[in-house]
Length: 360
Image (cartoon, rainbow, N blue to C red; front, side, top):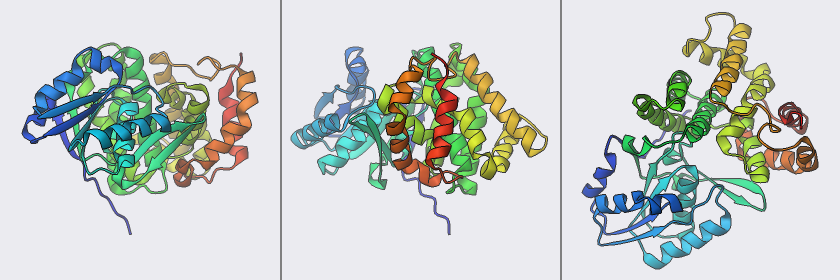
């Protein structure tokens, strides 16, 4: 028996944050990083919502820690908002979700993504870091009540963030399509998200504004897909490596994905080939289609000026070797391994890690 449940209300379009004014918000806590407080975007949300009381928690940093989430939860308990609006990328949304969750308060949670990739605006996931390890929290209570996809918030997106978010989107769609929990509904969402990203990411990276809303919606579609279907070893290793070396998550996915395809091919070649055909990459036999998919990812990675190895991302082979045992242990403990099409073991993940290490 299969089950599909997406309770998040999605509001999209240019100027979509104006919808906050119709939500009768009385006490609003905005969660963001310092940048959005300083440039006035957080205040724009407050002005749109017109609450009686408002406060901004602007301490969000990349790879937010358990400690930061706990500090934020104390703020929630103190100011008693009826609504929390998380503004920013995956870090702001994940930390905001954890703040609401750990506070124990009953609030409406609104996610306002400003990057296109994490999908956190529609997922049951929140990623927090503790002692150099990224820990995925998974609970349906973490799923936002409302997601606001405002195209006006994407105009200043830097090329590097477009690339990093884009490969996060790509990895979500690809892993969801091959995951053990995939269904016809998640397949449709993942396939369309993947096709859109593959086609339009180079234009977005080059600064074309016309495609950014399409990619933004595709990221949300991929988020819905993976939240229902599951992910895999690309994310397990990316979480582990990100906790150790603090490389942006999407960049790590870009490094890992080609090797992950090869590792999963014994069980998932037909699924990968189907995804490649849906994206117009190949109409040939599975082996050729799989090769076309891998080559397309490598070409896209180069087009977006992303590193091909950990060494190119600034991590020396010596650093990888020194922490390899810790990296593999954390990856195998990651819940994303549970929905990977091949049951992973230390040898499989170790082989991938060796392939992506590169030369110093």
